[in-house]
Amino acid sequence: MASPILEFRIALTATDYDNLVAFYEDVLGLQADEIWTAQDNKGVIYDMGRGTLEILDERSSATVDQLEVGKRVSGQIRFALQVADVDAVVARALTKGATLVHEPIVTPWRHKNARLQAPDGLQVTLFQVLDVE
Image (cartoon, rainbow, N blue to C red; front, top):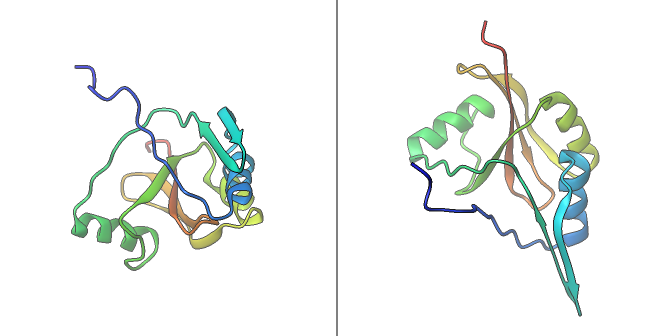
């Protein structure tokens, strides 16, 4: 059955717009689909691939934080972005203002996960699906 939602869009308000745009473009390699500037207004839209909404209860969020970081640290919203090479993206992210919350770990479900804090303060999980052994 097709989803009744045609597009899932997350709108971030950036206090340092140019720095945050550089982070997502230079770290993740995103390319703008739409850019607008009018008077003193700026905006950009990126195609982020397939979007999903993951809703976790408090216990599940605490479990993920425990696995990835060792304690409960994330807020109500956290990005989880699948990438091809977690280590390479983490290295780029650190040069673009991200803070490493926890180095990469392998989860019980065979993902290599790393936790970052983006320059705007948002917690971001980068995950790489590992080959099944």
